[in-house]
Length: 97
Length: 376
Image 1: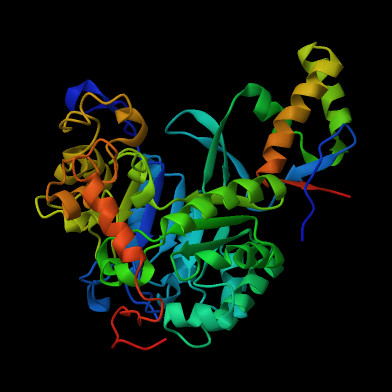
Image 2: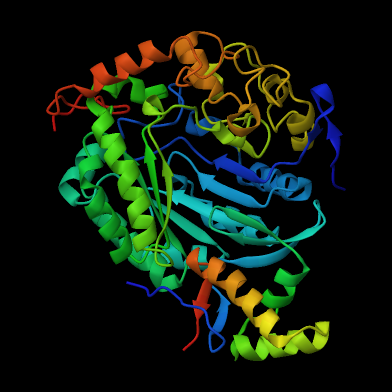
C-alpha cells in the first residue's frame, strides 16, 4: 500500500506518472491533466509546479520563488504547502526519498 | 485553427469539448448483465478504420479535447490499439484505456506504455474470482485482471479500478476497497448500475435496496477520509433513491463527445435510445461542425429546451435536468425532467418500482448480454 504524503518544507516532490502539465492552446491557459481530472493553473501554480523536479526541497523552491517574486519566504512556503498538499491528497504527486 | 466562442440557442456560448469517449468497438468477451452499450451493437465490419480513428483524434485535439477515453466494448479487441494510442499521444491527448483486461498481455501492455498510454481503468465485476466471473459471464476473467493490474503497475502507469455496484455485490464493498488498495490503484470508481439499456432486463436481479444505498454512501464518505492521499474514490450513487438527478454528462453537449465504433457522434453513449434525434457521422462531417451545429448536440444543450419544473428550477445549472435517456425511457419524453427528481410527477411511482425490484430473489439468474441465461 502506498503511503499518503504529508507535505512539509523538507518534501522533495515531483508530478506522479500520468500527471502532466501542458498548454491548452484552444482555451489559452495551462492545465494539469491527471486521471479523469483537469485543473486549470494560475501563475502561482505554474511557477511552483514547473520547479518540482524531484531534486529540490520545497523549502529551497520557496526560497527561489521568494527571490523571483520579491515576497516573504514564509508566506510562499505556506501557500505552496497548502497547494501541494491538496494535489498530494488527490495522488497527483510523488515523494522522492 | 481553433473554434471558440460559438453562440448557441439563447445566446449562450458553446465551449469546445473537454473529453472524448471513443468506443473503438462493441466487441467484448464479457457478457455483463448491465452492459451499457446500446441494445443494437455495431458490427465489426462497420467499425472505423485505423486511419479514420486517427483523423478523429486529430480533429478532437485541434478543437480542444484534452482527455481521450479509449473504450468499447473491449478496446483491446482492436488489433490496432497500440497504434491508435500512439497517434493520440502524439497529438497530446491524455490517453485513458478503459478495459476489462481481457485481450491484454504483458507484452501488449509494455507496447501501450511505449506508445505513451497515460492511464488504465480496469473493470472489476466483483472482489473475488467466484463472484466476479459470475457477473462478467467469463470464466478466468478475474485472474486475468489481477495480472493486468500487475503489468500496469510494473509499467508505472496509474491504475483506476472501476467497480460497478448493484444489490449482489454492494455488501462486499469493503473487500473491493481493500482489493483496490492491494492492487495499488490510485483511484477507485464505484458506480451504481444505471438502469437503461441491457440492465433493464436485470432490474430485479441488480436493483440495490435503499438500505444498501444508504450504507454505501456513508461508507464511501468514511473511506475517503481514511484513505486520503492513498486512494481517490469517485462515486456514482443510485439515482433511483436520490432527491435530485445526476448531472448527466455534466450537461448535454457541454463537456463530453462520444464517437461510436462506426463513427456516429453522440452526446452520450445511450443517446440512440431517443428516437427523435438524428446523429451525424465523422465520415460525412467535420467534428467541430457536428459538435457546434449538429442537431443532436443542440437538442438539449443549455436550458432553452427545458419544460417545467426544470425551466424555473434553481438547480437547472447544477444538474441540467438530469438524464435525457432516463426521461425518455420512463416519462416517454426526452425533454421531461428526469423522473428520479423529487419535482417529477413520476418520481413516487419510479421509487416504488425500484423498491419492488430491489426485493427480487438473489438466486435469480442473470440475463447475460448476448448469451443464453446462465444459472449462477
